[in-house]
Image (cartoon, rainbow, N blue to C red; front, side):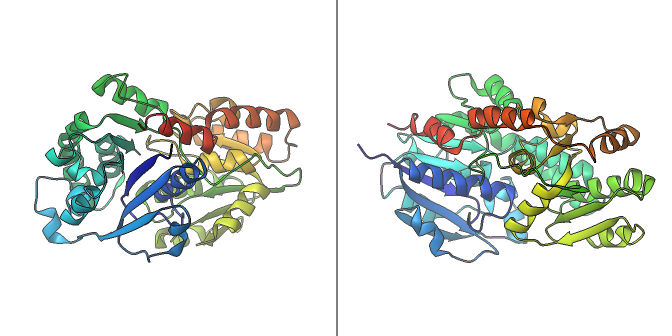
Length: 375
């Protein structure tokens, strides 16, 4: 018997070029490959319509996101209110299939009386109010800091609507523990992050440089880039570094100009980033903010050599044994870099990665966790 599923996405999930949409795209691709018929509802802002989604979906509905000042004037979180449109409700009512809401962003109609008899699932990409509280803490701009704090308070209140979901699907064990405690064990199902990797592919050849990569326009990653430059990269100019990622903040270029051993590589394609990860002797995985499982961690373990990661990066991933854990202390990080920069990567590590990643992060296995919840 064929199974059908409505998926409501917060943004057009192709191209799959950043964390949230990557999870959405490879989830719907895996569900399609497992035989699920998908009706996709997606909000749009800053991304073009694409025929690529037609390969995996029976139908695709697009909705304009209402950004701007007017969408701020509400008790609802801005990320929710800006995605509130009756057209979505009308189209969801065209069938009686289950609904998967991607993030609190899309949950405006989660508690709507006309959907009360539908099976409803919510993909929890983060504990959103804690994520926004962290963004507020990491922001240097006063107005942005204030906005993020207000949004975190709105999200904390709005999150109570999750009681109307039949299932909550967090992507890390840390978040699963939070939702278990608040909404019950039966309602909370851990479904790890979906990603573009099909198998562990680690080359025996590598180049002796350290790579840090990420979206270099976000406050969290800007802060990390400056931490690495100010506290570690400048300490030993014999060690080559590459910092790569989307839209590097101007402050990163300015600071990097002081270091001969550092190269900034902006706006690379997915294939170019994958090549950099695979050729680096060390991938440094560092964050100041605990917020779900980072895609950069998964990608680095599938294709990279030594992965040095701090506790906040590993939190909830179940991948601690596959990385070299480093403290937040710069001198200790530098010690580890020097220890592993010229060290061959053992085959035993490759085998362990294959065993653990295939067990926890296989897209088809995790798609079947969702399929098992469908009537």
